[in-house]
Image 1 (cartoon, rainbow, N blue to C red):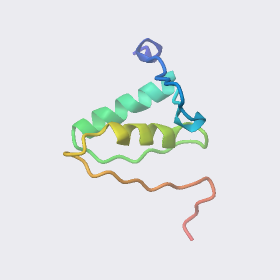
Image 2 (tube, rainbow, N blue to C red):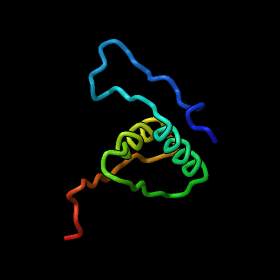
Image 3 (cartoon, one colour):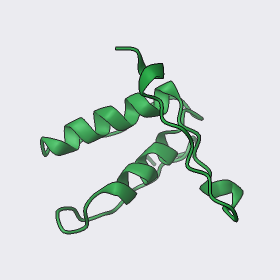
Length: 85
């Protein structure tokens, strides 16, 4: 599948703060597609990846589009310095 074909245009509104701006890329579209597919089939998932690959941004965006009547929203964030001790 060519993800660049599915990449949507950024939703920019006047007065948005810098941290509210989300620029979709092939990788973020692919991530959103898989999260939506997995959640649609009621499977749990854990999003893993290298530092700086927009995992947190994608997850926050995905959580915000979930219907509130079907899902309880919550998140747990680990940083690059998180360890098991």
